[in-house]
Amino acid sequence: MSKIKATSAYFIKLGEKGKYEEKCILCDNTIRLGFHNPLHKECLAGKWDQVHKYWMERGRSKGEATKTTNLIKAFYESDDDVLWITFFRRKLYWGFAEREVTKLFDGARIRHIKGGWSNRDIRGELLTLENLSGKLTKVQGFQGTICTVKELEYLVRRLNHQKLPTVQKAEGTLATLLKDIEPLIQNLTWKDFELLVDLIFTQAGWQRISTLGKTQKSIDLAMISPVTGNRAFIQVKSQATMSVFKDYIKQYENIDEFDEMYFVVHTKDSSFDIWQDTRDKKLWDVEKLSKLVVNSGLISWLITKAS
Image 1 (cartoon, one colour):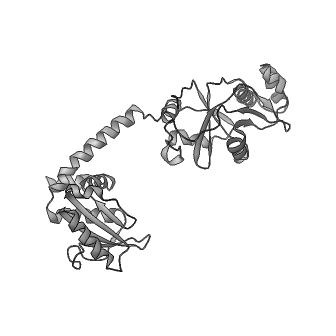
Image 2 (cartoon, helix red, strand yellow):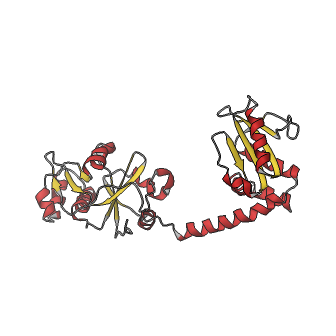
Image 3 (cartoon, one colour):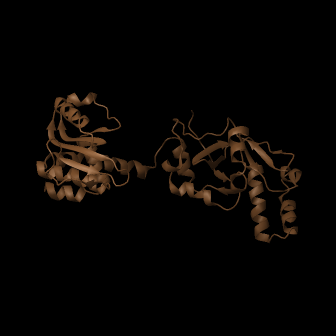
């Protein structure tokens, strides 16, 4: 897909409480202006003073009449390089509208979206509320029908699968931090390494069901998740080979009381490269641990221990 360019962008609410969202997005590929306005010909002719007068005569204040007129004008006169967005089923949909405005039998007006609505960026990534900035998604709370999208730069970059320079800088800093953390983990004493693993689990809400360092043979830590009730078999190793890992898998599979197994090792050989985690068997290496240290807020603890 070609790079997306837009001079401006509008958010449109497709009917009260999204009444027309499904029809407009999934069936017709249109934007729709639904409230009653009989002056279709006048709008097409650009006679906006008459439109303004119409709303004034119906009890709108001068400010309200101006606001409504400008809304209708944006719908009728925005160029085909203006980007339109809306939200449906927790996804962002976007498109460019054709210039022609058609009046329907019920008085509503529509413009067709060229090529249809899309809910993906140019690389095919789905645009969900979870992976979009709140500065953009908050536009859903707009009480009217059409409003200007203020976060135009962010929106266009997001559709083009590009990140803001500030985000790129932060990601670079984070990547450097993660690599710097790895040798700190590998330099911990075995006792402190086991304590680090324990802290990561407890920070995530897991609870120990055995005393640290005093569990049964083959188990360094035994944990339970109070949310799911799952019990975890956790083995901690400073160094290990794949054959050692497989031995612990067999032991785990022979113990009925556990639902998950975590094998944690900060220094491993290339024989682990073929391993793929399963639903209940997980391998945590130093790269994974580095991310967990950051996510768990344990950077200061680790630096102190490594000093």
